Length: 310
Ligand code: RIB
Ligand code: CA
Image (cartoon, helix red, strand yellow):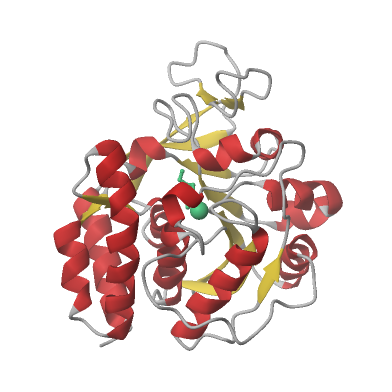
């Protein structure tokens, strides 16, 4: 029986690949996609989600647009990483369908309440929609089986030295999610930066068919930022790691620890303060990713992307 999942995302190159991984995986059933501000404006992330679904003929998966800005902070989009469209690289046709006429937060609640078994929510962007779900539909939020989010880090930052982008973009929303009492798994940079899809692996997709070629185009653009910034010979597919963790529970090693989000500091805005050595005595509120079977993840990802063209 496939696990029902909902993906709340900000496509974004790695979000797009995470969507494709979910669609290609029989272990899960993608009930719907919701979109948020983040890598680009809400208008663009919503259009990109629809474009990806339409590219692989999955217009049946509904897309609901959500928050166009953080709860409190000013909107900041990561155009420097994902480009003007938010999905630079491939020539993707403009979307033909529109998002459903329901706000993402209400859509998430409806799907969580209607599902026969608890739904896994996979947020791969800023957590604004998830925080709003907790506020507006607490009962529906409680019906979620778990939340497996891409965000945060024990150590390094990427948008600042202290913080990872999804958490930094809306720290108040993230703080609300981590203090919700729900079953939270945090897939952070400590894990995603250990699983780099190399340029060679990305290029090998080009010959596998139209979807593989499209993904290769995405990665050719996405890897420029990572080569320039980190010297990587490829790209971390951050958001796909969160989906892969749902598909293969053993892929990412986690430890149960307390996570707090710094919403006070300027220097450390959005830092996930992970109590790795349990110095505070605070009860664990998240399963925190600490390691990954990188080769198994990358093999799974490439195999599933290739399956679109098999
Ligand atoms: O820091 C990486 C995360 O921020 C990824 O989810 C990427 O898509 C951006 O949203
Ligand atoms: Ca994302």
